[in-house]
Image (cartoon, rainbow, N blue to C red; front, side):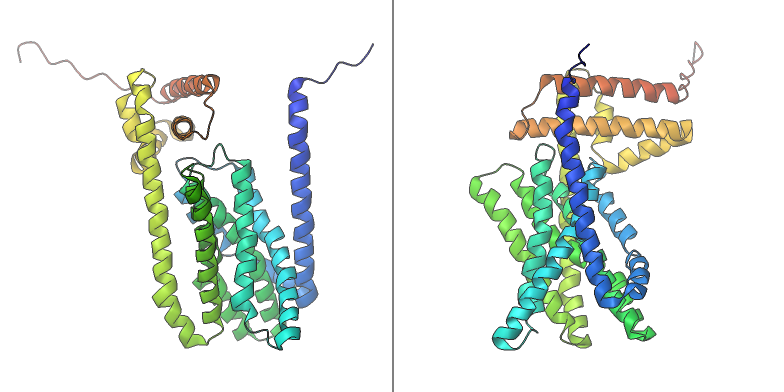
Amino acid sequence: MPADPPSSTAVALAPRRSLLVLTVAVLLVCGGLSFGAVTAEVGLSGALPALALAAVPVGPVLAAVLWLDRHEAEPPHLLAFAFGWGACVASLGALVLNSLSSRLLDRAVGDVTSASVLVAPVVEEVLKGLGVLLVLLKQRRQFDGVVDGIVYAAFVGVGFAYLENVLYLGRALGDGEPASLVTVFVLRCLVSPFAHPLFTMAVGVGLGLAAGRGPLPARVGAPVAGLVLAVGLHSLWNASAGAGVTVFIELYLLLQVPVFVAALGVALAARAREARLVGRSLQVYVRTGWLLPEEVRVLSSPRARRAARLAARDAGGRPAAGAVRDFQETATALAFRRDRVRRGTDPGSPEEELALLQRLSVERARVLALLPPVPAPARPAQGW
């Protein structure tokens, strides 16, 4: 008998699997080449310890970035791609292009000191920004704005900084001077772990604004302006690093710290805007009976959402807290979907909306089943 034809689902999944395999292969090859280039310069005895030392700031920085994205968590595989792009592809491209540019400058003018200020920032920020752009193109229906741009850009920047720190720490280990190693570790891993993420976040903000489907000049101009700002900040950082300790500290305190505070303010403002968006977009489901007004009030406040999860954990343990988290995430996905439909970035399938609403009802029922029943208030005695 002839074999059954492949199902439509299997046919649809085949290109996705092929793309996933190709993406992983590219990241692995580029990562291997990057690490090989670093090892060729500092030796395996320097590269391996540097891998561990450079990882110290990665977890805290990524945790801080994810804290900003508590309304609608990004898909883990895209976050992994963003980190991998920075650590593998962008780092390899920077190693190759920066080396070539230094050789060209040396042959042309006999001086390569300006390469770190004039060339490296352009090369590195373009390569890192390209990774964020690829995520936007892949996730354009769910790329909801500035917060998404910040998160993906930060992951790219952290990945790039990780591999770069391996190189610098490996060089310090090769010097055989503990003081040199301590200085590099403190400056790169403790004092400035947000430097590369901060530069790339400027590109992420620009792409996040472009994802909002505004006028065409704004959609083109915002990413370009973000790239120019990223290159400018990066150039100033490299210039200060090569101008001596005094100049570095002055620029760090007078420029980099205020820029970091401003970037944090932009990120918090964007997250607050998302909270208002959730409350505004879910009002229609209050009017149609799918949600209660109190539920929308909680869903539109990060503090109230966290308090609801903590209260559920105290009353029903981790399963109840997880059920409340699932309910909140589904409701948030529903709100962002409705906003995308309003902005014209999502075609707005009624079947998809109904599926989310039905899932919301199932998750509400699960929350109620896991929480202990609330005792009814005692009735006052007659005659009081």
